[in-house]
Image (tube, rainbow, N blue to C red; front, side):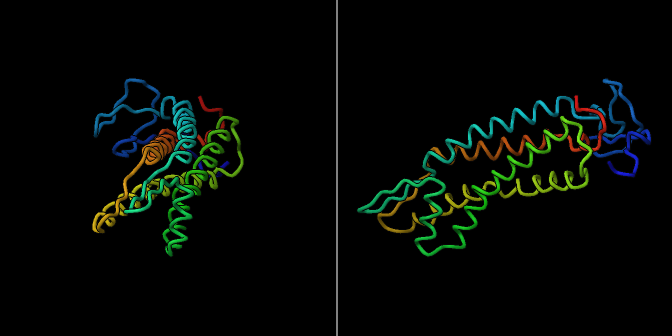
Length: 206
């Protein structure tokens, strides 16, 4: 555990909305004196909500990879591409840099988020004392990469706009994009629901 005292040990706590530091209280009716939002030492039901969002995201991640995300259509051909086949198609058509970006945003980043969030949740449930600073950095990493997770959806939108300028060519999104968008939203909600202060608690999370 950290050698420095926690805010709770010093009799302080922070508002989740305006970040005002106030005196520590466990009164369920306490409110922030500045923004009047409810005050609570830890997010209520943090672990249960984070697990629920993460498991739901993992379930939706399966059809997101199995169903095609876009259809490219010209005068003589029509191709439906999943995320992986779309990466291969981009690579084959001379866009390896874009293929790497889409592969990273669509495959690597979601899998990393699943692994890291599962590790953080399990370590808190087991009241682990191992590397709280490292785990806090992992959580900040998950928050950071969450903003880039919709990159392949934007690529589909850009390709659709660009191809519309070509005669007899067409790109349209397919259901895989919807499933992947749901995965992104659910993983972001899982990260937002998790209370990183639980990492520093010696007791098991409630």
